[in-house]
Length: 140
Image (cartoon, rainbow, N blue to C red; front, top):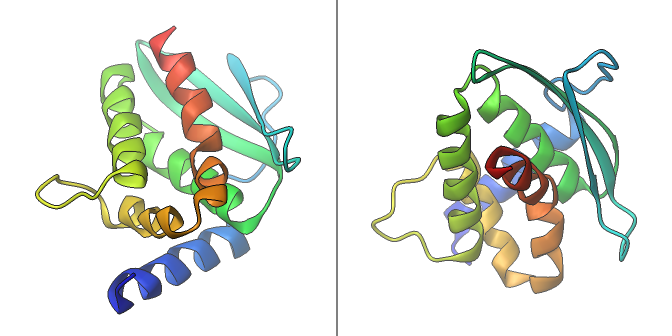
């Protein structure tokens, strides 16, 4: 792992773990997703307000390791105010950046930070947990 990627990984993980974006419960959401990993116990609820085929508002709450919490925070920040189609594309881009070398493939810098998890295969599920659940929801 190169030094730039290590620093980006640390910066993004620390920022979003310590000060997560929209980390609160929204019980009146139109949709509530549950992302749960029974192997490690990470568990987040994602509260989504969908209107006119767009994610108007998205929040999350729960518990997990720094990687899963930061990844969920990045997801919430990236998907808010996106059309369903754009949200699907962002999910695909994140998961691609997480699982593949992104040389020549456009990606957001905050997505690239999680590519460092490839060095620790057991942490890939932590990084993809909420994104996988969101992708299932959006495709459904």
